[in-house]
Image 1 (tube, one colour):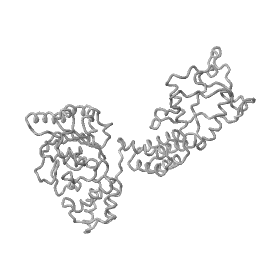
Image 2 (cartoon, one colour; image 1 turned 180 degrees about the vertical axis):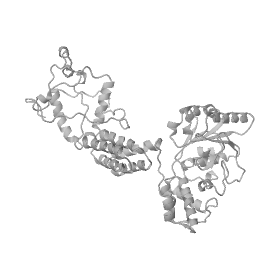
Image 3 (tube, one colour; image 1 turned 90 degrees about the horizontal axis):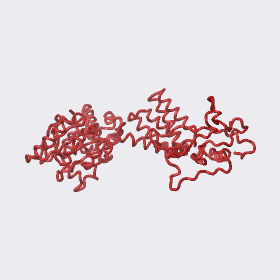
Image 4 (spheres, helix red, strand yellow; image 1 turned 120 degrees about the vertical axis):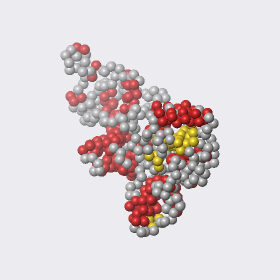
Length: 503
């Protein structure tokens, strides 16, 4: 079993005790000269940690965890390359604790219970406390996580768990409440730069065998994207390439050969998926096409399903642009169709065109709020029987029931609009749709009051909003992939019947 792709672990439930004092590696296995550079450069003490300053203050939980001054269970949450594995190594180096490591990728309930039973027996016999490290804990099922609760509660084991997923969604609440949650942030460029420079000169690393030009260093730091493991792996590859060429310096060309694609912080099933799509939608809503294109590119480079992106664009066209630019929905659906029929990579251009159009279009959420109010009324029980004039009058006997009696066919009127009740009695005067003055919706806003006056009659007043109620509730699903979409029916603007108010 491989842990984090970098160093071997024993089988689930296997034990690694603390190394002798003065050992170079404070972890699961002692590194050798042919170990990968990120493994050789793993900090041997907490003082060598770079970044995470918010967790390294004297007396902070992370420092207590590493030094073993307080037996607390901890969940480490952060993106790859931020030090979760390093912290596990430092904890494993504590001299008064027994350290057991396992990965949620391969371990099961049986392995967890075996460790807990052994820890309980040894504690009763006066043995050392046990630290149980579980990598990728979010991959444990609810049952597997449940098996940890009692042992963590009575401190039979001190749990140290690492995850790249949001623990509020991926870790059960009872386990989360028994642990201290430490959030590790992605390393900044200066943190990565410091570690790259240390690796070039440190005897554990390259030991000064090569030098690194400023341009090459900047390239490694920028493309690492805060993942120091990626930076050190690329540095080692560049150093090997320079040595093969008999060069004592790593220049930009050599560094570019080692890494040419930036690390993208994105997980199609994790937080980054939702955070990036949220930033994408909000950038279009905020009329910033440049930011929207960045987030689109971020998703495309990370391998996001283009159909998911297209669906969100189609939703956005009605949810945030609406009648301010009726063409937006047509362009969005055309882009979605292009994704289906053309595919990537060419469909990237279709998505980009739609994104630019939507970001620069006038915005209106009047359709969204109108649907929200209508849904709220229906769910609250408002809306009586269909008015008799509007009922189906096509089947035999319907006329005898009064169906369709008094119905006025708008097309029979020269102006195409007639006075008629279209809503149930208890919704007379309900104004759901309130046009803005943005873009094409301004013309609708000028026309709609006249249409309402004709249809309802000059004496019909809008229904008052209940006291304390939000006049514009957002419909359930708005802002999500299941939000409302679609356009309302169009109204003939040819005018009213003779003798009625002119629209």
